[in-house]
Length: 423
Image (cartoon, rainbow, N blue to C red; front, side, top):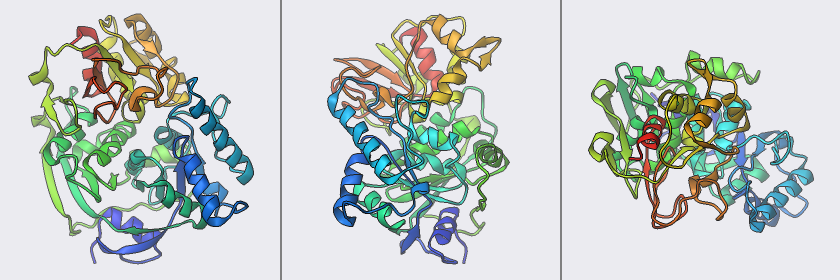
């Protein structure tokens, strides 16, 4: 029978030839991800259920990347890091990337890609809702809770329901003013924050396959904002080139059958779309940039797993070169590698780092930072009645700090332009 790419990947993980949407199956997990927020409670549950001296099912398949509250004086945050270190020592985990050392990487979803853990055809679960980012590599990536993660730690398996798939096809050549962030915000405005609950969001079309890996990751990253279980883009030559440069592990490519069944299908012509934002206080509160032009802002924030990749900063540099920002503007690289690349990669003969410094931006250390608020000393955290234009993924009240602040989700192009004009 015909299957979607998500069904095919889960069939492989279940050692089956076919799995149907709605069917519950045992999946063999290829990678389990956790970080400093959810790692400690996951480890506690693991020890409680499997025993204080139990060993994880496969140390090579456990990836621990502290990234959320890593640059703060907060004692609770420091305690979480200590607990990660302790568990990593006890279990001899080779893929623990400790903060404050040369192994530190930064935001987990981007670091997974950089370190070669995102492999086509595989199954990756993580204790973070934006684990769906990994689907940009033609694999299954999904966020889970601490209890499920603890079960995987002990068994390497998880009991899951196979999701229905929704297909989003973007035809045409991408205009220079349009980005992947605009595409996903367009979708969210159409289907809402519960429009894809427990479904796979499959992205297809000429425009999608013209995107860089960084931009594809933006698309799949925000599948969860529609309630999606996973976002996915079938791997192609661009994917393989990226993966092969980072790992020698074998992999299998999957794509949906032409007659696969979908819950629903949506078609867009990118030539007919324009830049959009998500207005406060929901990712589906879509409006065209044109319609909210003139709205005064107090801060611009360019960073996060959604908007802190090298490609995002290249877009921002296109706008900021030779200009000055008129509001506080935070540049927050997702990873240590991205931060290093800012001092190497150039736009029109000037490094991105120099462009941002000349424009008056503040460049922060690589982390999640203010994307999810954080302790009071977190870089970029909103205060009082701030109005923020941000390349992050959520804008609920209090998400970036102050519950009184308003956050407009936008592309790096829009965030950079707004930083200059102050509106």
